[in-house]
Length: 211
Image (cartoon, rainbow, N blue to C red; front, side, top):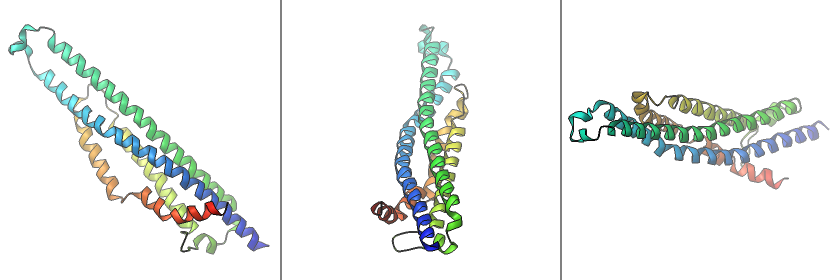
């Protein structure tokens, strides 16, 4: 009877894990699309800030353009409007990243809840057992928590980078380099989410076929 109870508890946790991995795969694609769209916007933002700084420094009255008395103001207005628009588009993508972060947090929280509910019926051996088709439940739970932390930290760092005002031109110019450094840090993590999804691919297939 206990064995049947443990088998049912293990199946419940495994199905919850499989649903979470299925959802994470879609969320990760959404995240990557948003990050990809941000790259040219961040680069454009830096270029616009550099142009604005030059516009502020140049004394148009001492150049051949001095005949156009309102040219400097018009150019400054146009550049400032472009900065505002670019920041707005970046913030729209940040909303997508925030949505992914929140969804992942919810999904991982749901799995941990299911595991907690069933933990009394699961032996330590059942939680640690690995097979040729499946990592252990303990491994997968740890990976999910690492993934949730990854999205949470990534979103926060990128949000802080973009927490600039349109008049903070020096800070805006630095955004591109900081953004690229953040991407480099992601690369050094060896694609945490992709590796996890690869490691559970056989497990997901096996769990789907058992439904």
